[in-house]
Length: 98
Image (spheres, rainbow, N blue to C red):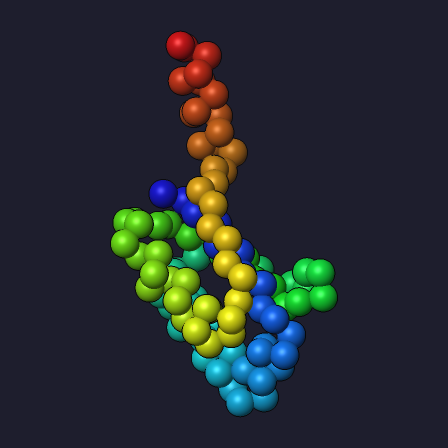
């Protein structure tokens, strides 16, 4: 299932993680693990943030994916199933057929 993972990092924790080198390592590990179709990094409400769109094969992956962000950075994590334009078109066609 195509899934969007949005992560917001507290400034103090992420400052420490940048200085000790753990933030780049964590981001690299997550990029390897998730193999996202898209990944973006940006400021949001004064915090460093990341957004990944990836294929969630099984919900049992959730703890493996989110715990590193909680443990290392005390991050706020949001996970949402999402669609691309083709998915939306297919879904609406099914709705219209009844």
